[in-house]
Figure (cartoon, helix red, strand yellow):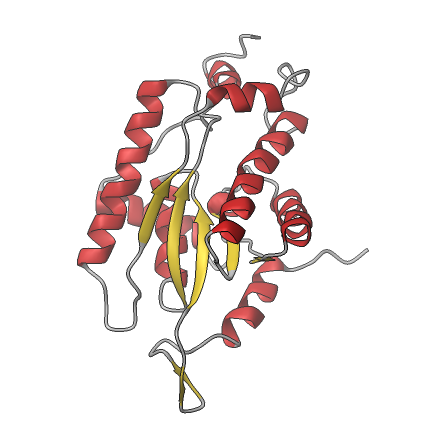
Length: 223
């Protein structure tokens, strides 16, 4: 079975959108609106740089998997700071970036992964976490009239891009909103996110966010 090249699928969609100057074939057109789920500022940096000339982006920071409140606060503030800096430096072809913060509800994460707590990072627990965050993004995208929704998670070499796209496409059909396919690590996207993180001096965490991934990172202590 041939694997889908999600980066190429994304490029096809972008080619059909209004150009970087807001025009295509001489016809003015308003930019399409994207609700972008962001897991953190570093991962969003390249995605925002890449897409902001094509789409009007609102970042949704919804990450109930970050089970330590102090850690959550640190990450959400870095997201706000990055968006503020990128808006200050907006080029003539770039659209302004907006942000929404979802509810901080780690109890929703614990409910979603119940029974999978002991599964290693990258397994079924992560799949359920992906669905939790993408479902909320799809729901809001419909409620607020966005044209597309997607997530920054595919930029990570440690995240399963095939799972993420399959979940996103299924939820898009369920909610009636277009999912924007992606594999943002392609085209040196991950490398560029590291460069941008250094440029903006972003806080880069060393674990995904949940207590289970933190314990794995600290030495494989089982919850």
